[in-house]
Amino acid sequence: MSDNVINLRAFRKAKARSEAGKLAEENRAKFGQTKAEKRARKAEESRADKAHSAGKLTVVDRDHEPG
Image (cartoon, rainbow, N blue to C red; front, side):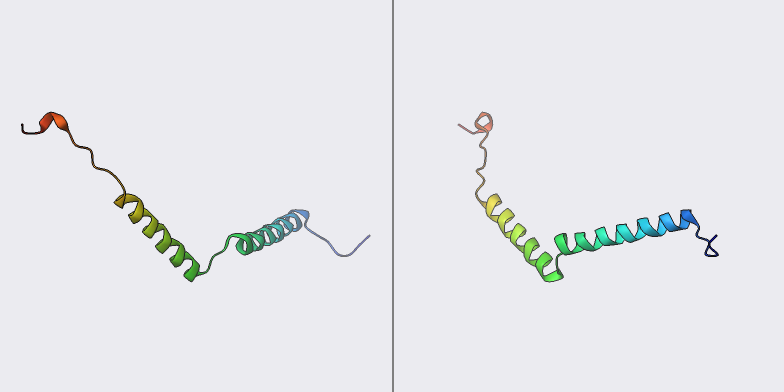
């Protein structure tokens, strides 16, 4: 017999944490953005929203026109 006793539950938990850490690192590399990139994206979205809003037409309610 081996004199090295291993708690299987603790081993499984450690393995799951390790795998979750690897997945998290992959996701950070894949989806992560720097602060400057986030600011630039937000500024571009704001500019696009303003441009979109500027092109909207106003609706005139003809029932309440004086005349």
